[in-house]
Length: 197
Image (cartoon, rainbow, N blue to C red; front, top):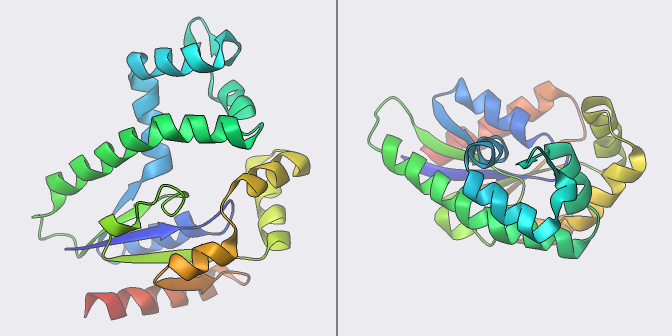
């Protein structure tokens, strides 16, 4: 079973690409989703984050994700601190999941859908990495429609991510997703078939 990391910035289309491959026989691990579930369950982890960022991010001693996002995306320092706490946890989740399903003949590939594979320097875990990218204008309009957050907020989040140029140098494959969803499907399917050979 091959291990593939699919990554990309906000509203690049990485999750759409990963979901498409689910129907093609891949096992998908959505790292962003799973890390939120893990954080909701782990009171120890919540306490640790509250002790660092203060009670302003909590309601009834439990983390409020909207409040946490406001603080975490405020600046590079806060962003790095939170990632430093969460990444080791996410790596454990990814490893545990892979160990659980690696001998399952039902799946052709283990795919991790994660925004920060390169930022976390985790690319060596994968056999291949695929970067899904789109120009900033396209991503901004998608993100505003999808996330219902302000343009300023999205631009701030974009500024905290690794530059696309740098990611392209690290990725094994890059998909330009400025066009239709069908165009994205064709491109990702082409790469996927090639990798399974």
